[in-house]
Length: 250
Ligand SMILES: [Zn+2]
Image (cartoon, rainbow, N blue to C red; front, side, top):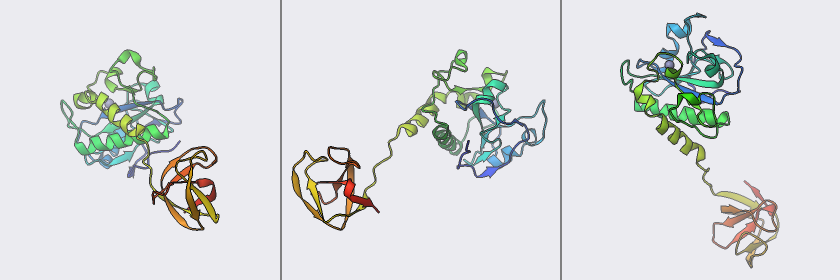
């Protein structure tokens, strides 16, 4: 189990249970009720001082400046949400916020939160974040995989500002998760002397000419098609398509 590469500061809290006993399938966003950096948050005495009764911790802390810190490794359970079972399956994130209602967070912190959530979902194979605002769905992760502290304890957490944005947060994270990676043109070296150029991606398309290699060609589009194991590549020149079986990406 890895931790986020977005982390710029690490201060592991002694208040944790190692290892967690459940696969990560939930996220719990908290408001820290203080406009601090990730470093300052992770050095709060409640996080730093071992206290099996009142001590607390979080997997990640996000500062008002957008800094991201690690307080408890993902493989371990943080003491964050006043629920053992929730914290065993959730990644918990403390976000710096105003100290009073509605516990607003800065744009920098919000942006960092979205980035961190995308990263957490990707690495833990969480396909999308789901939010219904429905406490009765706790643990039913196929319907809802975001939980909030106020469901487990008499608290405002995560504060109205973040609570009312949970649907929007899920939407923004899911948009990033669904983004197809954009195709970037690349150069290939053609290994054979004579390679057919065809009108389309497949041997069923007419030949329009030959690549008289060996030479280097830029591929601007890829497609699968008849007669090539590696697929077909469209030449930048506009001459047509070549089988990528006879090329090497450089
Ligand atoms: Zn909380």
